[in-house]
Length: 162
Length: 341
Image (cartoon, rainbow over all chains, first blue to last red; front, top):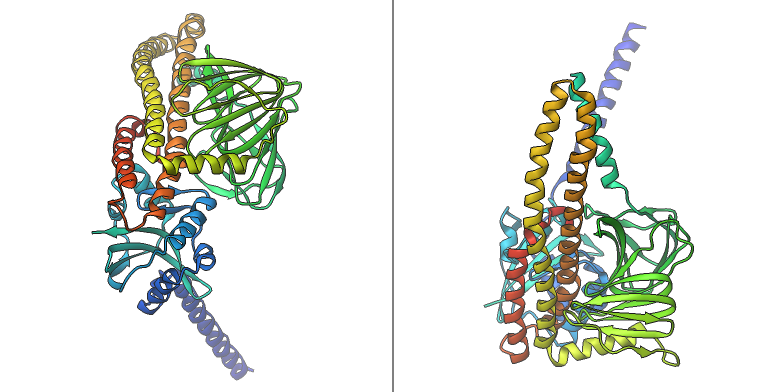
């Protein structure tokens, strides 16, 4: 009887330990901030350069920041990508110059205005990543977030800066 | 402690009076319709949701929504790709609801209003209504088209006013007086075609459109420059009266305190609230103009000439755009809070 009790306690402790480990593991997965691989960024830039407007629009939801302008209407975000594709826009020979979390004054890379400051504070979170791309046209900035259909979502776009 | 409670009770009546506001309810939505509250939080608009002053409705492509004002039986139909804001301002010391079509198309029909009829607005004009059914278009360049179906309206823009009766319409450019009245009977009112014309006009001469926005924003800044010293004066008078009221309450002179509250403190408080309401109205309308019109203009031009900042049209626009943004930061932003963005 006593033996069974010890075995039962041991089994219960094992189940509890495995359960806790699983929960901790799941918890850390859910809370780990997003960081795209360089390959994913290249894939996204290739999609933009291919003029795949429909797919890029699906990755870009309002509110969106274009240079220093907050686009709150999805119609404006969609129009921006349609216009860029129609203008034959391409990011030439892109190379990732930097990729990382957005610092407190990250907004100033887009615009030194209340709009840009509040957009970065209010609409971006721990999963938002700032990517600087050096291209033949100059430097571009992309604000990316967790992936949808294998591509990072796009929350902001600026450039080129020469 | 008792004196403190009495003091709070004395003032709470005025505070309640100051926050009374018109509300609207969503009675129909089709497609993706969002609601943005005065704190800037965006969420889906559901049938039955109530909107208060400061709330906006934003419709996506192919979507529409209908609201009704909770006092009376007025209906507000919001077309696709539109932004509609429920605002308020003070006219002659009385608080009035302002139904503002920021961009897009909105039809409104007013019947049997239990309270005072609201004001209609775009980011560039303001109109009073009398038993009216009206169509309002707010274009991408800040232009407005107001067409009266029934009833009448008195419309103001650029310091001038015009009265419109049934079947009459008028177009208004930002910062300018209303254009000539015309009869819209027999003409098809089509927002998409009208707005496309505005886009083409803007692209043909972006600098001219930017200068119109600059003039309109300058008029909002002038209104603020007029109101801010008035607010400072009222605040100083209120602070002084508040200190006197507190002294009367502390001295337990309840009857005198009540008379002083009703005769002096409340009027000063309401007068201050009225000025603040109008400061907020002008600042938020300027923000809407900057966000949805100037921002839309920038987007349209920048994405059509993404790599060509030397393009003369783009360069001239950008010079005016940067100047307007600086004026906005200097003159309007101090009256905004983060929740507005």
